[in-house]
Length: 259
Image 1 (cartoon, helix red, strand yellow):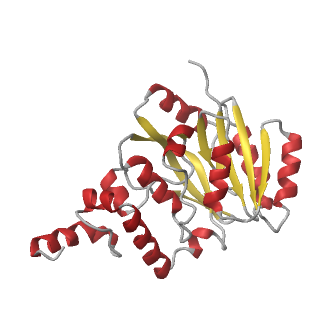
Image 2 (cartoon, helix red, strand yellow):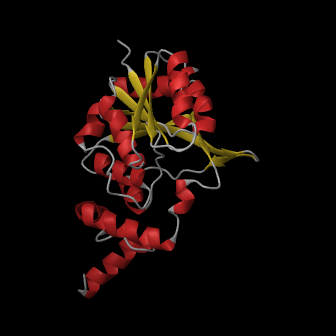
Image 3 (cartoon, helix red, strand yellow):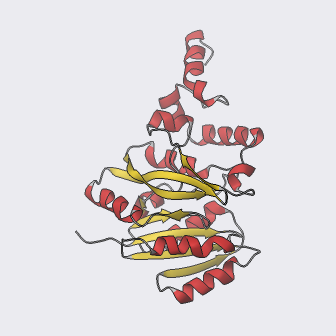
């Protein structure tokens, strides 16, 4: 079977100190052919300079510079520019194992019904690392929470078919909404049985900035507005602030004739 080109889309905003480590982890992959698209999202540190040096050093690397527009738009810029059949989003401070891409591509090529392939993961920092305990995937579980990190392999055509990442979702977890709109109309998901993704924990990470109660309320309102059909199907009504209780609460309200 012909090996399809994989485009690794790496948005970078002020992550210059980690960028080479991220790039090296991709280039260590046992899989070829690869291209790496480094999207500098208006960084104010040395990210663009670091990216240009990597572009000169490695023929697989291509740099795109854009004004600061947010990670969703940066990823979309990379997806649109990608020449590959397959796309792997990877943030500019995270890393992957050498086997991840090859194993994921094999699944996508052998199983056309599969839309998303991810793996087991580890969270790490300067003080050490710990396993990232991801809940098993199902559509009903996805309606309540996200268990697929952004760095999963997909076909470029599938990413474009749903319009990429929603650029107006600025309250965080845009990867959750991306998986909802990609999978709610069908398609299988496969998790590879090994650790292939390493998520860097840092004090100023976006995940921490968007973890407030207010951001959670904004996020739930956004998701309910865009995917009411999906939540009705899986949760019998809208996603609630206490997400794990959503289906029970909606079912009770329907029984009472309130919903």
